[in-house]
Amino acid sequence: MRKNIFVALDFSNFDKALDVANSVKDHAAGIKITNELFSIIGKDGLKKLSSFGLDIFLDLKLLDVPNTVKKTVASIETLKTVKYLTVHTSGGYDMLKSANEAAKVLELLGVTILTSQHASKEQVLTLVNLAIKSGIKGVISSAQEYESVRSLSKDLKIFCPGIRDEKGNKHDQKRTKSYSEFCDMSKNDSKVYCVIGRPIYESGDAGQNIKKIIQSAN
Image 1 (spheres, rainbow, N blue to C red):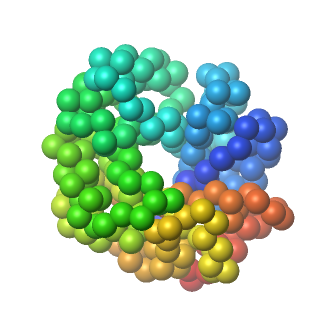
Image 2: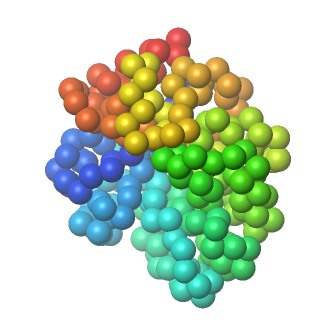
């Protein structure tokens, strides 16, 4: 089975991040790092996390004037450890296009509407079209919009947060799917990934938890 899970390291404890990354490295496609963790570990921490052989998705959700975002993307590019970097599609076409001009190796992912918020499909698709027009490589949207987003582009990479375990605990998420539902709808798509955090690391062993989640789709 294709590895399609990015494990969200949504905390600021570096030792815990190293432990979780080590526990899931044989089962995950990559790890997602937010401002909370990145502000603590910096480029040296990213280098250590890259040693596990997992793709690194730096979730900074950049949103600023076009030139500032462009310069920030160029700076992240120099780290050479990051594969994916997020920018907010709500920043508009000029910002997205400027950001994309600075991304040579980095693949930019446009955040549409957070899965912790309610949103209509039309709202999400408007932002996805903006991302496509700007030329960035992918988008972040809930699995509930996956099929509609894919209908707009067969080449766009799609990352779906808000994926929960079979117990159905939504935490603070509004637009969710279970992992098995996600896999059923995307089983023939090699350019879609899901993002899972708390169901993997919140309690128990992260390695065992991710294996159970994967097994739920079999």
